[in-house]
Length: 419
Ligand code: UD1
Image (cartoon, rainbow, N blue to C red; front, side):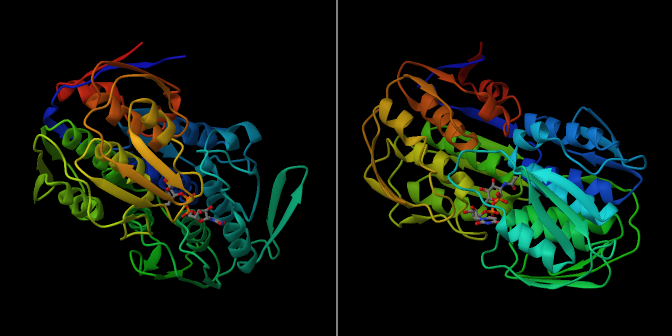
């Protein structure tokens, strides 16, 4: 089992090109199924979750090759409609393949997906939407067996009780080749949804309203292959900004999705960092000690403060001057990183969905274990700020979302080794 060894206390300084986005690469890879031709995806991050998606595609009979941040997927010979349970459990996003396989073949068999341990992560909205689109869904011995009653999915009016990112993506993937029109009310507005729709439009799909809370899709008989560039990863961007801010450093983040990171930047600015943006660049300079964030940090669907950036911001605030309050509104159990931060000397009190973070003068290195992706990243942020050496285990969680995190940190002058 690999570990990260971090010697903290160094100011990070330098220029970093932001990696491609994990959370849009995954549904886009699923979307290649709908084309039946070759798709070329550039700026695809080299991550274990992306390799899992690639294994799913190959298992279905598609051909997926990956090198130098370019995925080439040809789905012409797809001949399977079932995803084996072992692959489903590797990551939660495997459920996104359901909409795409149904859109292409009218049938599919999956099982309950795996993924981060963030409390209960049901898929009831996905299932109920598929049923509205004419899909018969049955559960049998842990398998979810789906079949279009008339051989093909049809359009439907779907009002989501909550703007779920995954459910919105699954509906879009199923709807682009369904018969007729689909309207999604209260759809998720996350930038990754727009990236998926941008890709599908490049393949010939008819979609309007992405980025807003009402998406309209007119089903097409056939899509075609395309070449598409994946957007930058706003959460990896937030993580590196938090790292640099908390070490009192300076960074130019290039190839960044400035508008999409804005909800994070507007909160980080309250810590006293100076942040400016120019085209696709973000420049951050941090003072010697951050200030606590005055306003309560409430995680909300986009364009609110992203739940995926909650843990990394908390790490930047554990040794800020004053008290910051977090309110986690998207997931239960998204404070699992706090016990590791407390072990490093942080003063954090968790009361249900609230976390009260009282800034301490300094953190000290410790042996800690990552238990989920963003929580693991927050431990890396704190280890870089702490005095002394930290050993982070469980880093397979971090590798799901960060491309060679130790190389990025070293490029900025930090001391992080993988052993
Ligand atoms: C996606 C992101 C994840 C991010 C989350 C919220 C990917 C690969 N993952 O996850 O990083 O943290 O959006 O921005 O893109 N829910 C239900 N029933 C459902 C579906 C969801 O109750 O059928 C609940 C979930 O348990 C959760 C909330 O809705 O409490 C939000 O989930 P959702 O937006 O679906 O997140 P994911 O798509 O899983």
